[in-house]
Length: 457
Image (cartoon, rainbow, N blue to C red; front, side, top):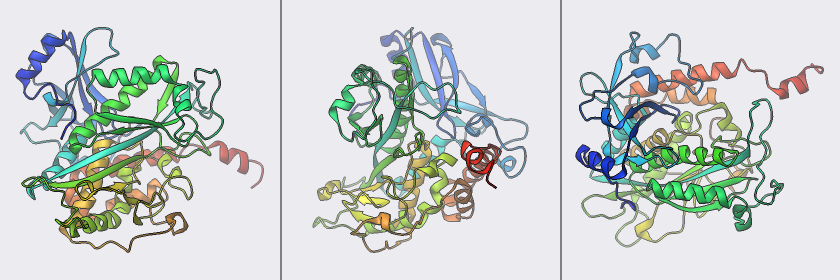
């Protein structure tokens, strides 16, 4: 299934690969709740299988500002005495760091407690937990993300709005250039570096297109197992940011970085394969859609509103989900219909799939994939029927998704079925961290408030 076989399966393979690549340093990475790479950098000779490397468990349980709750249910899960996590390298994730001056490898690690159990609130642990549920049914989930992002001018003052960067012509985009080849060519030197980095890292990237917004791009990934793709999205975000900096611009995966421009999504195509037969369970033998196909959609419709804090994790995320802005506002589904939240693209029966169009580009890929798969899994297990197919413009329908992070947090806290699948400890830690972030944001006074309220109320 994978288009690029990992160079390492075991720690012995990893040692040999280090030698072949002439590696002198190793970045030991752990994705935190926001998708930020945390960890340590070691000299090659200090990186051993029995090293016993540790990090405080709170490292993977912080908000985007680096803050955490001062009290409350968070500490029913997180030790107040700051316990260590024990890190174990996943050899299949080993990649070269192509922009490093010296030969450097990066390896993602899993987090365990002192008794050898996976840390339940670490993002990779949550995705493993959900994939194990599919495995227990004899199924293998398959996903293919499409990740949008913006290129913007360097911006060192957070009070100033972001602007599209200047391309080779010396001019910035001032109009919509959807699917324009010439607009992509404006940034050829940057994208040549991105593709070269991706090739050096063996990332399964497919096509690059210019999206609707000024300076907005999209990269598509080949389909694969959810954990492999989550790792690739994690690596890809690091790669694009680094490449952009080297060309004197920023790459941002904010959901809504520029006012009056479309937001950025991470659309995720998903299907489920029977491990015994290799058949797509979304299709019957005669090629028609199966009951599992409809139940999976029913699960997405039923549970996605409560999962939104996982798919749209920041206050900014909800600025993207507005009517007529190339983003869904409700839980309608349809065949070959881009206005709905859940779209089934035209495809032969073996490739029948469902595209979740709700997820933001700012979502943690491990958490987002775990959440959308959990919703579909619950739909199949509980045989949840979907609503009738939407054959018109879903933007004309009513809002059916939470409109703010505060509302989304409360919905997630109250949804016990999702907590059963994702883990109650994870949901508790996650919602408490998001509550802290939301409280921090509410202390900020925006330019809009000063402009319209200062002298008029």
